[in-house]
Length: 248
Ligand code: ADE
Image: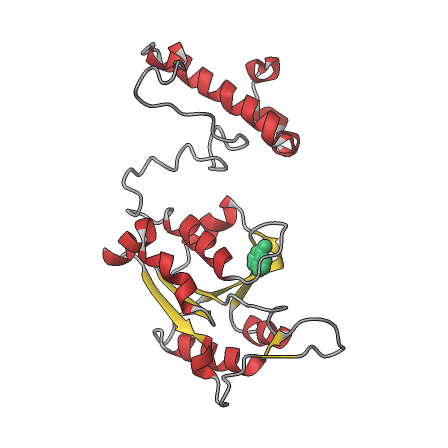
C-alpha cells in the first residue's frame, strides 16, 4: 500500500518511522512518502494561508499550493493509479473501525492534514470530480491540525494490512472487529505472575475449560460495554445478544 502525506510539518510525521508502521515500511509492506506543502509555494515567505472571505477569525489554507502539491503527488503514481484522498477535519464523517477496514483495502491513500481553519473548499470540489475524497474526523474535539489524526488513521489502517501484525489472529478479538463480539468492547486481559500485589486472576482463566473461558470473556465484554459505552448496546441488533447476556 502507498501512503502520501502532504503537510507543513513533515517532522510531525516522524512517528511513522517507529514501531508497527516503521517496521511495515522497512519490510516494504508500506510505501510512505511525506511531503512539505511549502515546496509548492513561490513567494519569499512560503505563504500557505490567507484571511477568510466573509470575515471571521483565523486563516484559511490557500488552494494554489494544495493544487500543485496534489497534482505532483498524483502524477508520481502509475498512469492509471487513482488515490483515495483522506482529508482530516473535525467536520468529517467519524473514523471508525469499519472505515479503517475500507481504507485498508485501497492501494493508495493521500492524506491532506490542514492547519488553521482548514483548506479552501474549492480544493475538495476540484479533486472530488476525479477522485474519491473522504473528509474524516477522529472524534468530537478540535485539534490544532490534522497531523495527529493522520498518525491515528495510518496506525489503525496499517495494522489491518496482511502480514503487518505478527499474529494474524490478533485483530480478530479487537473491540469493534466484525464477528460474534462485533457489538462489544474487548474485556480485561491478564498475564503472569498469577498474583501481583495481592491481586489474583480470575480462576476460570486457568481452568483449561475453553467453553467457560469464552463465556467469561463475553460476560466481561458485555459488562464493560454496558458501563463505558451504553450507546453501543442500544444501537446493536438485539438478536446479537443471547439470553445469558441479558442476565448480566
Ligand atoms: N483536525 C482538527 N481536529 C480534528 C479532528 N477531530 N479530526 C480530524 N481532523 C482534525
